[in-house]
Image (cartoon, rainbow, N blue to C red):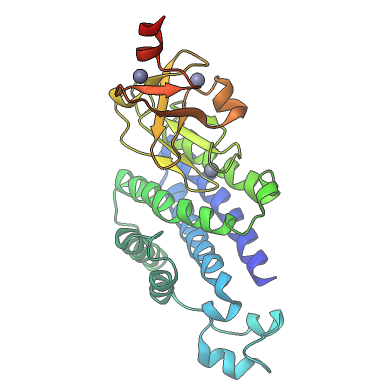
Length: 289
Ligand SMILES: [Zn+2]
Ligand SMILES: [Zn+2]
Ligand SMILES: [Zn+2]
């Protein structure tokens, strides 16, 4: 119950924050930056609390306050929790280090503190930071805090609920963020790993995809280079990346059947040094015939 409210409020704040982000980048109005910062920071705090509270609602509340306000501190009621003091941002960062050291980097937690400081300055003084710098920090905050938090929160979702409301909300937020920050330079495809339609393929000014990430399961490909791509047996585009761990390929051309609905491309290294795709190696098999 507590987790649900936290999440719902968090996602609302992400959406409001992104709306202001869009306005701020278009009009460079300091008031829009201010609203964006307030909303996105609040969203980050709520999201991270939702992440930590997966270890029990008691995890995000001050133990002394739980003892004082709750009849049974191990099983607090929602109305009791409303009266309890919850952890502050630096305590929250410590908890994340304990529960999720792999998902949140040291720089992500540092970013959280920096943006929190900006937020405090903003509430008490004038905002003394250049809009461009702020935009960059907010964008980093989204990538380093929101994305990993989204993936953790969805790990509760059962396998067949890939089209759940929560997932659809998170996919829509990711689209909204990319529309603001990279414009048209991305496409959306089926994720071969979790099979939800949430694999974002980014071009970053190049004619080929340079990186990808799935906002549902966290699967990602980074620093792609032209020579990493193999010709796809289905769409014939030079768009397939070999995944050694899965011993399969993934086609990154969003119009390909593999990208739209089939998932993994059957693919394995051939003894000739090239790849055998869909059971066929263009190197060896054409030599034989
Ligand atoms: Zn996925
Ligand atoms: Zn293809
Ligand atoms: Zn071969």
